Figure 1 (cartoon, helix red, strand yellow):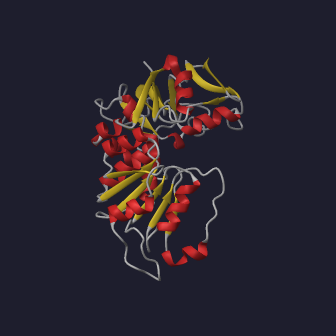
Figure 2 (cartoon, one colour):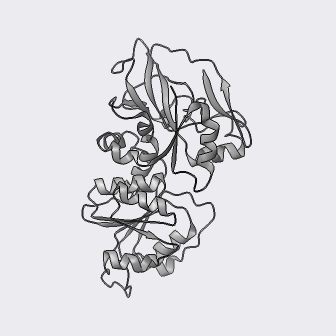
Length: 338
């Protein structure tokens, strides 16, 4: 079979690998689509992930159909369409340092258990949309860390795939008004399409002033006044200006979820922040959300489909990886396999 691997710093190749042998408790999945994540670009740039430095299989956002089922496996059948939990693989995280990658023709699920390693999705869901299951689980975890309540107000910084997924998740949980902040016009336009109630171009507008206009003013508390009555803040952008803006504008009792990766330290004045009683929650991965989000993805697949900007065939996987790693060139790139 074919599989995409990091072979050296800055280099990837489609290589030949043995097709996995299916044991009595295993399931073989023919991969039909796999999304490209920003972390894939990082793995490529550094030459892979130890201990597989220079030989790391890529792809951790896979969807496919079952090609073979071990004799002892129950609840699954050949032809079932499935999404996978990359974190649960017995031989390491799929596409993130494990022995297998989702940008392959096949992935073997050892000791497969329905609901733990994979779940089925209806056949009418396009594979390129089903491949959003993993990144949307990340977005859902970030939303869950906010503990959103119906009727609240929220702002999401960053209109990339995770930010857009968070918008959908917040609206599905009954958040009354969601604002999205970004600097790229087409991303702001897409945010409105997936369900955002308003957008702010932070390159041209004062974010705090616009939030005051949109959400009103929060009650005075310990001398804090003139703050937007925004309940929830979510950082899916990963730039210092987001942290600075939230800490300077957060109302008393607001909640702040950070799912973005900040590559440089950000200074925080906890003394000035004390009276806000701001709750700051970090969000990493998807401890419980990998298949919780699947129901939402299936029920609202046409809305989630808007997140996919580019679909390329496996023969153009190198172009797909380059496109995904080029700032501003694409939103979510998905590679499809026949």
